[in-house]
Image 1 (cartoon, rainbow, N blue to C red):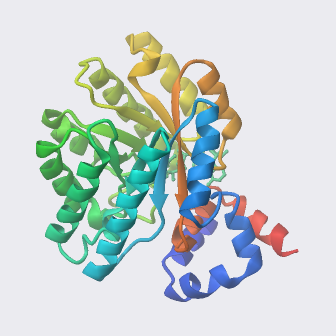
Image 2 (cartoon, protein in one colour; image 1 turned 180 degrees about the horizontal axis):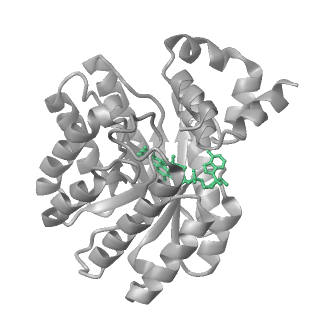
Length: 307
Ligand SMILES: Cc1cc2nc3c(=O)[nH]c(=O)nc-3n(C[C@H](O)[C@H](O)[C@H](O)COP(=O)(O)OP(=O)(O)OC[C@H]3O[C@@H](n4cnc5c(N)ncnc54)[C@H](O)[C@@H]3O)c2cc1C
């Protein structure tokens, strides 16, 4: 792992920075590159604009590592109102949620109960995407996903290509006809559990994408989301899908707000399905630091804004 990336990821976990850094104007200003604003109104307005360009969205209310049931309950209530607003606004938006924000560290039953409320309110046509957080939560995330998937069809989970275990995890999920979002992985993980070299992560990503695209040919209704901004990988995946006979509407691309917009627009123009994940909320600091870590050159943005 690069030194700058390691430092930024360590910074994302610092309670002191989490409390103080968002108070600095140049940090706030840099964060606006990755989010349309802190409020749900700003997120919904951005979703509407993207929809006008044929791009769907995923909304995520920032916050993680909640330790009190009451706070997780508040987040759940918030998501329920957002789902109502999505429906009344006629938006092609879905939710992307973090289990540590829905109380998984309080108890798995609290988290399960919160998730079922959200999934039921979303309704069959709207998938609720479960993010994959650090490796401390991989087992519980997959366990809760399997429990939910036995009951609901509109729930999806994220898989991280940097983890050695992910190929096996995906194979084990096969009986559940899972909808999966494939990402490279954004957390600080030890080399004994995660591929340390970016080149190897990219290769594993491609290999896992191949597995998921092949699965999509079974036409189970499961969704395959290729969530990356990497133009080279995107090109390899579209070429592979064409070679396998996977149609453009059998999988989708997902990107983060503010990153690789032109690449996304190009994909939509060429007939691919695409969604942008829009994050909002006041608790943006750890999420923002992970965005900086993904591209350490982003740290220069901070400096530039300071100057
Ligand atoms: C929709 C979506 C959901 C995600 N959910 C999760 C999740 O649940 N769990 C998880 O661990 N990770 C998640 N991620 C993050 C993911 O793991 C990667 O950290 C992130 O996508 C960067 O990797 P990349 O695939 O874009 O490839 P990279 O090789 O990191 O980047 C490829 C190119 O994209 C551009 N780029 C990438 N990131 C940035 C950035 N931050 N700023 C500016 N340019 C950038 C650069 O041009 C870079 O050269 C998600 C990503 C997306 C798009």
